[in-house]
Image (cartoon, rainbow, N blue to C red; front, side, top):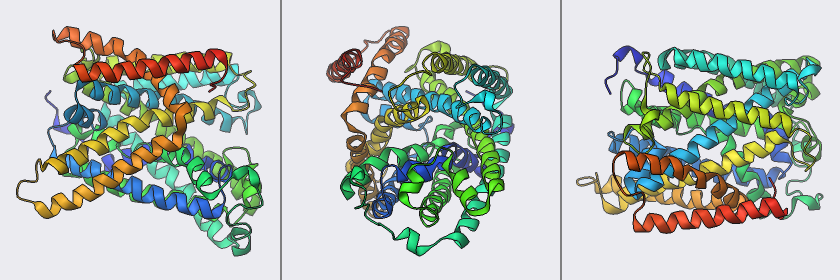
Length: 482
């Protein structure tokens, strides 16, 4: 595919895509989300694990971008190159579902926040909220159709705008921080519902993954980067920036309000923490910041959703119709498919808003979206390890190979830990969403006259189908719930 140089993305735009993808709605709900699962001690341990795990994953993405410059599409391309067509397809499919499910959740959180000022929007699931979300969805859709470069520029502006309230929150809470509140019950012993420290650490893991989804954003746009080396730089710069923001927001909050107080807050909980310190204007400031943040994150993820399907279609892992670009070099069919799915789920949210299972639809979708990303992350880390083990691209660089072997090994262990922390429930529900994708995979294979599966892939797919059947029966019977 030929690319006009004016459509190429520089380091600043790529970094903004990474930061913009990660800093969405998650950080604004972080104080309550983390306090609901863990107290100070476990949270600090959890962030240490996350920092090491996600940093090694960021380094793996950086290494792969530099050592395999011919692979465009990030998580999808690495899984395919290392482990075959079906694993590549599954990574693209899982990542895509995770991304647009996250967008549905973002729309709900955005209008739930507006409900703070305009009650007609309620918790983001009223008729007025769904109609307004639909209008915004298609406005973003047609904006992206105008061109990737233009949309990425707008994303850069919103990224800068939403960082400002976060820095203000950190600065104010730094002065309001009280050590006696922070150390009240470090290990959560007064709250038996939290369980052991290890249990607390495990339970907070899906939240930490959710706030870091997007770390691979630059690698997905690698084919559109002005300089290939900028892809790795943007990934690491974006990661370090977001890690500092997340840890400061989370830790400082726990020196302003106690764990039980934070756990009871409504989301976006950051707004109520600042309101606790400075009064009503603090809640307004954070709410405005969240609205800007969500708009930017929605734009980032609309771009990423379309790009991952387009990249997979370019080499026939996805069907040919997803390869079509418009005059502005935007993957139009992939964009239409993505946003139609978002629209359908927005309608489903409205008709299921009376669910009484105890967990709001927004949280359910975020947990499910997070679980869908775990397998693509695992295959990317495993491919980095595979290159180092084989010595591929390291022919005259033994020292670098040993370093990357350790980094990739840690990232693989971290990816396996995440799947364990997510639990069997979300593994089964993920299988239920992975299984139908075989229809597109089979169509793509037929288009190039190839057999659908290799013998090994048949066994893998059989495992996915078994997991999907167990999940379907579990949902029907009631022993498995969303």
